[in-house]
Length: 296
Image (cartoon, rainbow, N blue to C red; front, side, top):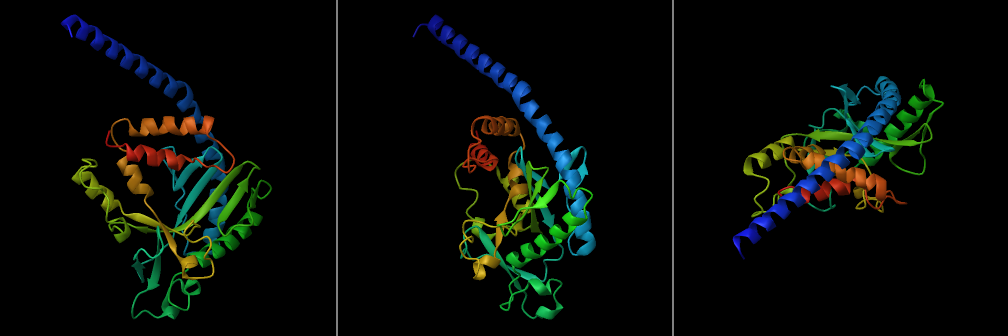
């Protein structure tokens, strides 16, 4: 190809890239920022109600400590699932008396078993321990449901908040518009589960070894919530299992480059075009998509 042809091709490529970047930035400033502002306003409104309820829960149950706190204008301990659906992770104290059993028997889950030599009667969580010595995630949710229902009745916002029935999870309906799920959890920092030992896949080149070390040091959470693996097994040991989640590790992987910016655009596109009955496509799908191509 003649030199002038290459120059013309290069010019077209640069022009195309410049036009794409302009559209990218325009969409971000016009649509994404508007979504962020609307979500931030909703979060503040929702958190005001949830904090009031959790404050009463803490009074009734000292073993529960609310992690929903405002820091630098952001609320920690809350995840935005969609513009009208949120999850608050409620961290519990003292998991140390239990062994973390992660043998892959229940996909995506693990069980917590009373440590050898520890008597059930001596445990801080005695009423949630099964006869086999397992700390029951299901019993924990049932207790929190009762506490939240009582707190809703006492809350200053009792006229605009109510519990959602027909579920084993702790879910509240706020102002007839917003759904908030409160999930009991244990933080497992500095350890990495055996079921995730295959990560990262060798040969991809991303993430680099130092980032892998940071992510694994971040650890994971154990959540008391329903999952596809245990929904149909509520009368067996599987119903007492805890769901593994890697939210903090995933957030660490999204640092750098344009990853967070692209994720914000994907979430905006999802809210505008993929808000379908049954929510077949969630914001988490957008996050997974971004993590899969994160090395690019």
